[in-house]
Amino acid sequence: MHLVIINASPRVESKSNTARIISTFVKGFEKSGNTAEIWHLSDKKQWFKAKELYEKNCNILFAIPLYVECVPGIMLEFLETLQPKKEFGTKMSFILQGGFAEASQLRCGEEYLEILPSYFNCEYNGTLIKGDNFAPAWLPDKIANKFVSNYEQMGRIFAVKGTFSKEEVNKFAAPEYFSEKEIRKHKRIGGKIQKLIFRYISRKNGCRKPLDDKPYSVE
Amino acid sequence: MSILVLNTLSESNDEVLDLQNQICMQSEGSEVVYTKEMKISHCIGCNYCWLKTPGICTIKDDYEIIFKKILKHGKIVFITDTKFGFVSYQTKNLIDRILPIATMYLHFVDGQMRHVPRYDVRPQMGIIYTGKAEHAYLEKWLDRVTLNFESTSIGVFALEEGRGILSCI
Ligand SMILES: Cc1cc2nc3c(=O)[nH]c(=O)nc-3n(C[C@H](O)[C@H](O)[C@H](O)COP(=O)(O)O)c2cc1C
Image: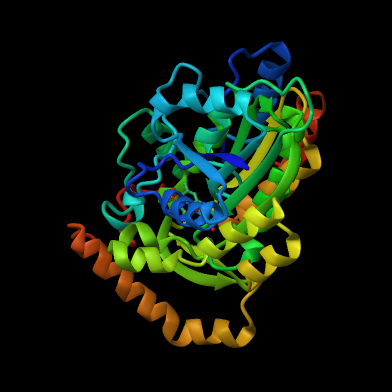
């Protein structure tokens, strides 16, 4: 199968978590002789090509960072350049990833993706969801790659099955919610460690303000 | 609490104008902003508003005007066109770029992870749309969006039933 992958993140490719996830996924996907090509919506010059390939191919995968519970504005803008397919039969698959860790956080976005292909006369072919993907962009390459390494296996499975099955996806995206015990632990120590990490990252990037600074006044 | 009406339509007919007036009459100090002629980019996902310049967006365009108004009014009503059953990209961009209203810090609210709000404001949000929408989905989505900002939804209304919002506001 030849797969056209469109990275719907507005973030520059070198920083995009979605881009990193796609590369890892494709490694697994191409193991069995499949081919894939990747286009990035963050680069406006690639829109025309991405549109053309959507028109000519019947296996399209949108890889999407969750933006306020749904797809990013830039993806909606790109979709406005596409026409519904004249003939039914194109499969639209999705990878949806977000920052919050629980799978439940991605369900609202997933629900929209289940509807979306019908607007393009395409067939919905499943969504691979997973959270806890905020960090890679802020980590050194080696650690960042490790962070997303399990997507390779999902690429391999997608190559064999040709679709994302709910069962497999749910296992991959777990936990749906954190247990009360885990939440208590976060309150006790996890939250404090996270704060320290965020502060460290921001300092390293030249930030001298507290992360909860209030630059605008509220009346 | 005053109301901020954010109108992203490319054209507003009398029905829209009339409804906007009625919404603004609900509360003193309310106002309408038409974004059509404004320069507003999509969010570029740099995360600088969380980790580098806390609370400040790196993109220098007209969104700052809107952001300040969001902090000022307690309620926001989006008047939007629909595409693919969802709000237009112009409206989604306005919502994506609200992000500096939250901090990077995380905490749990009702068993789910949320970002700790930066300010003591929790803007309620409502949507009035033209065209065809996945109505039930939009309602669910707006509930989730407002949950993220620790506020509540005012509701989603088709323009023809737009007056319904007046009793919810
Ligand atoms: C404007 C904006 C909104 C976001 N909204 C959500 C959200 O609702 N839920 C979530 O889990 N993550 C959310 N995130 C986090 C991103 O989905 C996450 O960081 C993702 O890995 C970014 O991928 P990218 O680097 O390819 O853009 C949001 C990020 C941004 C910039």
